Length: 93
Image 1: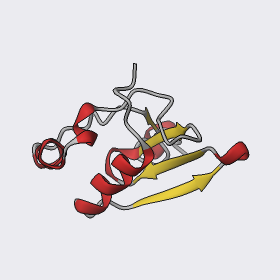
Image 2: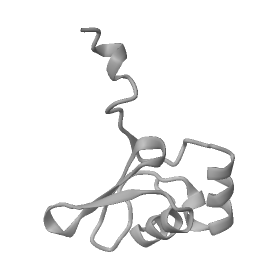
Image 3: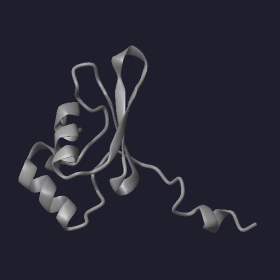
């Protein structure tokens, strides 16, 4: 279940809240979004724009999403990625 959040919903909410992101195009016209906020990989998105994975329903409404970010909630849905936050923990040399 993913609340039928579409690519345009995600991009609109990120832009409205000045959240940095990059879009990566995959095979067969699929795409993913990687966000600076909460380190998320959002998508992939089907060709019709719908996300394959669950996303927070706040992406559907401007006010809900703004409140989610304002409260510092990290649960946007999608997949989290950990590239650097724990680097020194796992690399002691």
